[in-house]
Amino acid sequence: MKKITIVFLLFIVSVNQCISQEWMTSLEIAKRLARVQNKMLFVMWEESTKYEFPVVFDDENGQAYYTDLFENENINKIIWAYFVPVKLNDLTYPDLFSKIENKRSDKYIRLFQNDGIKIMDANGNILNTGSFHMDPFNFVDFIERYQLNTSFLKAQLHNYFEKRTFYTTMALGSKYLDYAVFVNKKVRKEVTDLAFIYIDESYELLGVENIENKEAYRQRFILLELKKDLILNRPRKVLRYLKKVDVSSINPLNESLFAFAHYAAYQLIEDEKKAAVWKSKVSLVDLKKAELILNINN
Image (cartoon, rainbow, N blue to C red):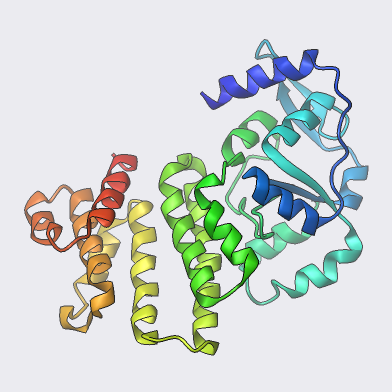
């Protein structure tokens, strides 16, 4: 369905006589636009856009050919249709790097630094940290993988933008984790990794803000790690951990999520008998989430 949409859009732009848009140069304005339009950012360092970037592109007949990302007007229009494109001035590098130094993986840092495409969310965090075949670089496959509609996250993205606190950061990370079950399987792990950028950030904020039930939230971080493993179809890893946990140590605020982890894990390994033991302890909302996780992994 997505490929049909892209080919159809290609046909539309081929007959459209509108003037091609220049990429944005202000990251802050682009992030605001991304929030409004429910899009991700398509970001490159400005200096890198001065050189050829060869891609494989499909025409309206499905025929593949090589072209330059920066010279093909149809490609530019498609980028604008699915993303907010940004050229980052290289002079902004020190300031941007200071915000992620010692806070991201080596792979994330390399992607941030290199001349390639960075798909960022509306807060400037990079999504496309997974493997993608670069030689040749198939533009349509890349768009299909990373063109995400973020309307599901709209409220949480807005709240985080308005005021970055433990609660708004945790809410956004948790929502990204929920969102992962709705995206293409190829990008699912990357979405869960993006979720944990915020969840890890909320853990840091928990240590400095005046929050009640801090121990309960620290316990919740572990349970969210288990939820990530369930989304990525790792039920046996989850069960190995759960077997080591003393049930009496679970804070009442986390009982439903704890039960959810058991229930979903047993469902994934098709142990209906053990799953039934936990089902009544899971909230209706979490039961629905367990069903979604089961559906995407079957």
